[in-house]
Amino acid sequence: MIPTSAVLDAYLNFNILLAFVFGLWIVARFALDRMGMKHAYVTQLRLLNGLFLAVALSPVFVLCYGLIFKTGVVSPDFSMTISDIIVAQYLQGRFEMNPSQLEAVLGFRNSMTSDLINFDSQLGIIVSAFLISGMAFFTTRLAISFHRLHKIIDSSFAWRRFGNLHLLLSDTTRVPFSTRTLRRRYVVIPSNMLAESEDLKIALGHELQHLRQSDIEWEIALEFLKPIFFWNPVYYIWKRQVEQLRELSCDQQVIARNHYDVEAYCRCLLRVCQNSLRRDHLFSVSLPKVALFKPDRSMFGRTPAILLRDRLVSLCEGSVERNRKSALVCFMVPLIAMVGVATIAIQKPNDWSQDRIMLSTIINLDRLAMRNSLATPPSR
Amino acid sequence: MRQKKKAEFLTEVELEFMTRLWELGEGTVRDVLAKLAPGRDLAYTSAATIMRILEQKGFVTSTKQGKTFVYRALLSKDAYQTRSLKDLSEKLFDNTPASLVARLVDDNDLSKDALNEIRELLDRRLKNDTD
Image (tube, each protein chain N blue to C red):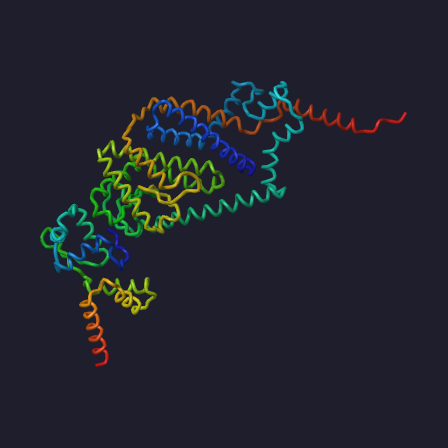
């Protein structure tokens, strides 16, 4: 059985890695902007999703790293973990610090995980209670949102069917959206939209493009991760970024693929937005679906109005840049390599290395010297 | 198509279709489409879907004549008006129809003729009740 400390350790690693990789993404996006690929939304979305996949697969990097050690290709003394590198730098005199303090800083994570598992300190109890109750709350919320979505689908009217894709008409929703179950994919259209053939065409084109881009699968995966990363602001910022890029790339693709009139497309977006402003209680809890327009405000990130404005501006600018695969590969390969290195770097150090024994010796000698200096000198 | 729980009220588009069908008495999808406003750009398939949904909701029934379906309203316009007013009275006027009528009578846009007509209707109803 996997020990609890290992699970907690992996959990902390995922959170740290997510923050680090988001930093990498910001740099990559800046570089893409400078390279004139500001509007290459498809490339940007793929890059962002690829990075998320790399974070999710980070245990594989750790496994590969362990295998390399086992085969003996690398010396057992070689270490890439941050704490080992810091100790080595300290011993080489690159920076000065009290050795006991350094040990306390390096051992902070261990003592924190131990506190959390054993409920040793008050802080440990508070943090554990917060994590457990938060996870329980967001899991319940997720279950409710799935149930609500099931109810919407169940109360909708079947319109057409193409293989496992079901087009449904709903009286209860005002915004077209797509979602899926394990076997079926759904596009749900407000039944009133049937009377607006131009809007209907655009909404269908938009939702089908989401299906082509596998946006629903990504959305569901991110929703499932919410109970785990609920406290991590990077998760919300990341999700908002994915949502924004998803819509921008989808708009761009739909316009390019179907040659819709940009003005008609923008007007359709505004009409859907206007309809969604009539309070739609079904959308008060975020559902695992991808909608033409998302009226609810997320915890972090821009308001729906600003997002809509960005979409309209992006459409009107008309700068449909080529989404070059070569650019994607050029960015993806080094970034994934960096994710791999970061994954290894944040792991717990292996057993006692020479450097760690040396640090421990220094600390012991330091303590001994302090004790000696405090001791009263023998009387003559 | 799956059988749905019968809906009580019509959506905006459905009401537009039902109004035309009430005027026609009965008719095919093309008949209803022809009765819609001339500027209404509506595909035949969309209109047929709306009629099918109306049938599923229990507002109309259809009979096959040759290759086409002829639709007939199952609910009269009067019955639907009563149902809508009842709902309005319940939701917006705290289930007191008098408040609803008071609001209607207070309306400045109501002409004298219309007010007289309302008075006559009330007198007739009161007379019938006392008889």
